[in-house]
Structures are given as structure tokens and as C-alpha cells.
Amino acid sequence: MSTQQALSNLNLTARIIADKVNQETPLDGNPDASQIRLTQRFPAISTKPTPDSLAEQSGWKAEIQLGFSPARTMAAETPKTVVHHRRQSGPLAIQRPLYPEGSPCHVYLLHPPGGVVGGDQLRIQAQSDSRAHALVTTPGATKFYRSAGAYAYQRQELRVETGGILEWFPQENIYFPQAKVRLDTEITIAEGGRFVGWELHCFGRPALKEGFDSGNVVGCTRLTVNQRLVLAEQINVQGGDMHQHHAGLRGYAMMGSLFVVHADEQLLKVVQTLLNEHSDYLNKNNMVAAVTALSGDIRSSRSDDQSVLVVRAMGQSSESMTRLFTRIWLQVRTHWLGESPAIPRIWAT
Image (cartoon, rainbow, N blue to C red):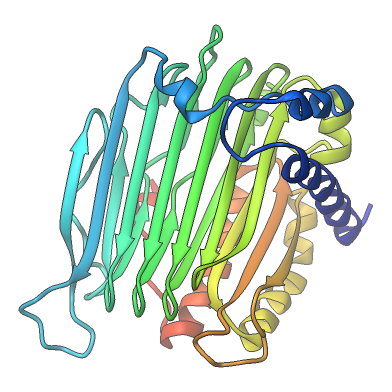
């Protein structure tokens, strides 16, 4: 099966499920009769636990808020970005900011326990103010372990103000068999803001020949640009559902999405060319990947026509998918700022 056929099947399956979810179920709130009917017609779709119900579970609760802004004492055209606001509780923290590129602020987000279990709740907020440029990553994968019944819940709220840049690159989420997880991401970009970031999901541990044969991963990623919702994607993966595994995931253990705001026609062509040039790489690493342009006029350079690029990939290896997305990010940054970025050294360890 060709790359385009596989991605088309994935997108078709996602649209069918997302359309039914959007038509018949609320994004949040208690399940109603229509949601019960939906789960009956689509066995792979489980009733999604609400944030309120998850808040009542016992477990570790952690929260971190990060605000990035240009240093007030800097009068340079590209001022140094600093962490002007940090508030944290529970086992979430950051290391001392790094400046391998000069002005942009690199931050490593830490979760010292090293894994998330049923009942745990993590909330992460990051905002890049006007003229600020921040890059946030993690030193390792986030592991969601087996659960006896309680759901782990992680919510990410990312915001970019006019003239700001936020690069969001957490390493992959690994869902162990029998894990139960809700993962929500809310991305809000003001007019003239720029964002590039990814989500990487690994179901099971393919390197150990361990599949995601039971468990449930649900959630939603929402992207709002210039006060307009341009993307709302539901995820609802039921471990052990072979129809979903073959028809939806096409037998792959990994899926990932990379989002780029602001994009134009030239950047779209650059990414398309890169993917075409990496066809041998994709085949060698048993991957498929494609890019789609959303929102606005991709041919326009106006700030209020903030088009979005979404690169989707499926594969069997987090390393090969991260490497591909990193190469795309290098092109995005070069297109934006005219120079290639410094890759976080933590990725090489």
C-alpha cells in the first residue's frame, strides 16, 4: 500500500469517528443517550471520562505555569527571552533555562517520577508573550503505566501572543498495555504569533514486541488561531480492538502530528519537497507521512491569513519519527528566521 493510500485511509477513519463524536457528543460533560448509541455502533469508541470526574480520583496532582517574555533590560532588536513567570506544584519542574542560540530560551520540562499512573493529574501551561521566543522539550518519553481502573489525566494549555514564538517538542508518550489515559491539548495563537510543535503517541512498546492489547487512550487536541477554531481532533484508541488497529492505525504502533502556524505557500512546498526526498527513508523505516494545509489563504503573506500546516505520520519507531519531524522543524525555523536552530543537546543523550 502506498504512502498516500495509507494516510488517506487514516484521515478517512479519523474524519468518520470525529464527525460522529462532534455531532452526537459534547466535548466535555456527562455522557448522554446519544453517546451511548455512538459507542454501540462504533465499539472502538469508549465513553470519554470528563475532567470533573477525573478530579475526584485519588493520585498525584501536579501543575506548572510558564510565562516567557523579552528581558526588560534588553533594547536589542531581538531581546533575550526569559522565564518571567513560573508557578508549580507537585512533581513538575523545569531546569535552569539554556541559551544555545543567544536570544531564544530553551527549557527542559521535568517530571521526576518518570511515569504516570492511573489517578495522576498533570496540568501544563506555557505562554510566549510578544517578542518572546521559547523552546520547550522534555529529557525523555512520558510513560503511562498500567491501571487497575483509574484514568491518568494530562492537560496542556499553550498560548502565543502577537509577535511571539513557541516551539513545543515533548518527547513521545508511551502507553503501556492496560493504561487508561485522557490527554487534552489546547493551543491558542494570537494574530501574528508563531507556533511549531508536535504530539507523538506510541501504543505499547514495539521494540519489545509488546502491543497495546488492552487499555484506552482518549482526548482532544484543539488549535485556535486568531480567535478561530481551525482544528479539533479527537483521539479514542481502544487497546485490543483489531478493526481499529488495522483499519485506523494500519497496523502501526506510532502516530504523530506536527503543527506549524504561521505557514505560507513557499513553506508548504518546502515541506512537500522534503517528504518526497525522504521517500527512501520512510520506506526503510516503515513509515508513512504527508502534509496538509489548513485555514486562511496559503498564498497570502498577510498576518491575518495565518495558514496552518499539519504533518501526520505513522510508523513503528519513535526515533525515526522524531528524526523526520526534527528535519521539518529545521526547515520551518530557517524559513521563519533565516537561520537553522540549535538542536537541544538532551535529544542526543
